[in-house]
Length: 381
Image (cartoon, rainbow, N blue to C red; front, side, top):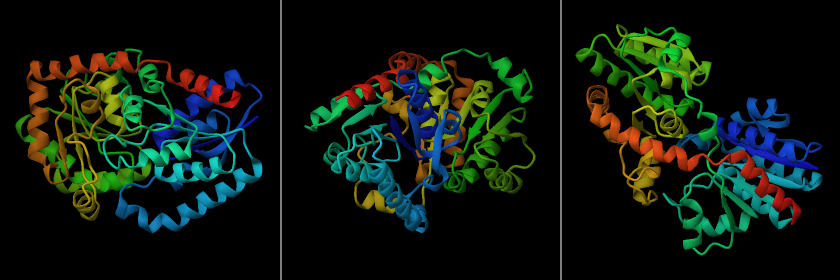
């Protein structure tokens, strides 16, 4: 048995690796190959291409790489049509994976897609295209299968929970995380996560560093820990630090984002999967995001965004408890004031953390095992 798995970024690499391991327990002789990151390769997936080829954000940012992305997709289609794997599993990266999955499904291959596109937030018209592209859609959030049913989609959807809910379930003391990172045990610590991609750092490094300066002006004893997802991002953040706040207590580290969040009293971070990790790690947070002016204009003029809140915690909690500041609102004074409130007011922290607890229980479903079971049922059909 051969199974193709296609991931598009770091979070997809983690999820793809977990599903590969769960499938290998059911099918020990199966072989896996596809578009991989380091975790999938560690799980035994042969790499046809690296996820770096697809890790691009924003409409304006993707244009220069579009020819190479399309060439890669065409090459994968030719290979899979020749190899005819037993199943093709796309993990997230919907704009890349779904058109490929559709062509392969039309050619008689079985296709599954993990992580529903955010059709409930924007571009709801994609529902029918998704139904034509895949035999099985594995959803990480409980409200998603119901949404597809309401849209009348003729598509098998399964809520599997989120694998991070199991992965991050083990409690690790804040003191242990601080010792690991060399942070002062008694200091007040703010973790700053400006995103895992260069495009995110480009737009968020400056306002995030300025927010730290805003806070430190009022509370000089604060320490700021910044886990950088890739070594290549360090220079860009260091430039912002040197320009706007060189005198602060900075701790820049490579990776270790979860340890940094565990060590922190509050977290300032880019909207994305890291916000879910922060929720699961039980840390109060403030969220920001910026894209290029062109991308923002396009989203607004075409009215593509259908939700008022974009961060996963606010979409999953019973009420919107996480402050969000997007685009023009992503200003140091907004971030600083929201972080200050979480630092000083136990009631503000408690309002977030009580909501986070309920979500953690809901998402803890042994996602990789449930995904493997649903895929096994697809293979048996």
